[in-house]
Structures are given as C-alpha cells and as structure tokens.
Length: 511
Image (cartoon, rainbow, N blue to C red; front, side, top):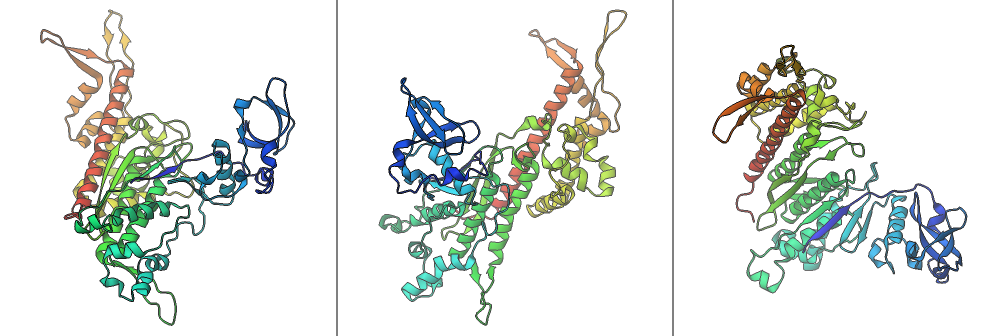
C-alpha cells in the first residue's frame, strides 16, 4: 500500500466570519435556498438564492455581503448542511465538491489547523509561521504506545517482546498530522510480519512510499524533515534504542538514545543541510525552495532499525544558475561562501561579497531575510560536509570549485567589430580581476584551451577538414553559462553520491 501526503497552498481570507456560521448544521431547510457560487477573490462563497430567472438561471446574494448576482446553473455547486461542519476528514462531507473543500480548509486554517484528511490523503496548508507545539514529539506518549500498554496487557517486560508484538498491540491515532501519515506507513511496513503467511517468512515486508508533492512554497521540504524525524524516533523506540530515563521523585524523565542510533539520526538529518545549501534557493514565494526533486529511501534491518538511507535526485533547476528573476536568489551556497569564508581563504580564492558576482546579484536580492545569516549557514554547511565524510582535501577543492564558478560567471566579452578592410575582429575576453587563466587553474585545466573553447567553435566537414568559427559575444556568454550549468550539476551529483556512500556504510545487512 502507498500512503500519499499532498502538500498544497490555497488562497485564505483572514476575515469572512459570516461565511463560517451561515446556519446551524441541523437546519436541513437551508440546503434548499443555499448554493455555492464563484467569487473573484474568495474563489467560492455561500449564497442565498432569492429567485430564478426565466432563462433557467438563479439570482443569489453572497452571505459575505453584496448585492444580487445572476449565475448559470453550470457555475454553481449545490449546498449540503454537512458543508458547515468542521471535519478532520473532508471525505465525510455529503456531496463533496471543490467549494466546500476549500471553505473547510479555510475555516480550519484560521484556527491554525493546517492539516486535514481527505481519505488517505493529507492536505497541508503552509502557515508561513511557527505554530507552538505542532511538531513537538511526546516521547512519553510514543513509548507508552509501543511499550507501556503492552507490559500492562501481557504483564511482561517489553524488552522480551518481538517488534511485531509491540506493533500489533500499539494503539493508533488518526488525527490529521504529517506524523499520522508517517505512523501509518511504519505500521504497514512492520505489520507484514503479523500475518500467518508472513510469520513463517520474516523477509516478507512490503515497502512503503510517502509522496510529498505541491507547488513552490507549499512546505514540502519541512514536511519531509518531520516525516523522517518521526520514522527515526519510532524505529528507535521499537528497537529499544530510545528509552525514557526516570527523573526521580515522580518527575518526568528525559529520553536518551543509543549512541549508534543517535549517530545515524544525526547523519540522516545533517544530509538535509547539504542538500538545502546546494539545491535550495530563495524564490518570490519561498525563502528556502527546493529546486530539485528527490527520492529518499530509508533502509531498515530485520528488527526495523534504521541503518542507512539512499537519496536520488532529479531535475535540478540548472537555469537558475545563470538566470534569476528579480526578487529571487541563486543557490544558497554561493551567498554562504562569499559571506562566511575565512579571511585567508577569501584572499586566496579572490572572493568578494555577493554583490561583486553576477551569479549572486542577478535577482537584485542578496539576503534571504533578516533572520537568516548566510555566514552562520556556511559554518553549518561545512560542518555537515565534514560529518558526511568529505575529507579536508575534498572540502578545499569544493571551495575552489565554487569560487571558480563565481569568477567564470563574471567573464565578459567584447563585441565583434567590422574592420575597414572588410575583415571581422573576433570577440575576445575582457580583462577582469580574476582572468581566464586563473579560473582555468582553479578548475584544473589548461587556460589556453579554456579560452579557445569559450570564444570559438571547431567545425568538422564531411570530408574531415576542420575550420574554426569565432563566436559572437552572445554566443560566448551562452558558452560560459552552459559550462557553469554543466559543472555545478556534476558537483551536486558528486555530493549526493558522497552522502549515499556514507549512508551506505551504515546499511550492510539491511533490506
């Protein structure tokens, strides 16, 4: 079975109290004279039918205010009294349609209830703020669900119970939350060992998938973090790697984790820091938008202990490297390194501030927000790279590589000129603080060869003869842009392989 979480955003109006309390849910009579009608800003509003036209249309007055409006029958949705209920699962509505679905989501959103079920699908609305206690994991409750209840019922020490026994007896909460989706997936993963056929063959454990989708700014990245956090915590409880420590004198104790389990959790979560630095960027709608797709595979051992992970990436937005809309930024790492690199490295790499580089200043936005310190984020990125097994030599090479791309993006070219004798003066690379020879040295290639590849093209005829075609300024810029996209894409792929290699070292003997 597949558990699907859909994350999306909807236009939410902060007022419209009248639309929330149109009538008592039990008033069946209002279903006759009420109808959902389109609205230019609210998308859909409830309206009271006043009369019908001779042409078969209806005239209604929106409950949010305003005068009479005429609508064709095809433009409206019928109303049902259940549509004004505040349900955790919208699929329980009678006559479910887009209008009551959006209205219910809006009403719940105004109460900071950002999660709503539609059957097995979970809809999440990004609140663009922190909601207190929303993602606090109650370790006492989790341990109680998987351990304490079992001990009471079986009068046994939970340590001697098999994981499938713990899973079978643990109660399940179905409140709308991203943790509920993660919990359901984990239960389906482990419950395969409970059936009679599966009990004979412990290798039968169907894989589970959680799909998190939505438009930019919907909250996909944060949702994936919370899913992984929950799955890691529950796995540690199941295997006894996480326990509650008695605080004494009747006080609630803290929770402690097995050293190996805590290391694995730290490794999995720190990989997100790297992927966000190199694959996320500020957009008009999202300060930390993932500009690539990813598929994360968590690996479990036979006793359901998480022992590793694999990440596959796809569709990295390469165009962002050389073209950024006004109000947006390039990938975070470019701003981090230019703000946070040490002084001696800054001098060696010829790095200035972000505004001195075309790749950073194209969108005329140099900072994410006042709350985000790029220099501090660079320290976090370097620490995560070191934790994930990037050697000092590889880290130094990565810094040089990023600096080379920044300098490559600053290259400019002269226009081709028509000389008096009819010949054309070819385009050339204009002098810069860091020239093509220095950039070539950073990239580990020959400077003359790099210059030739940027400003000219070799053309081979069908007979094998070779001609050199000098490029225009626009073609040279396109060459440089293509080079930047190719190099950065390979750097990103190398980092993902590095992360997987380090995670793979933890996953021997897993399924």
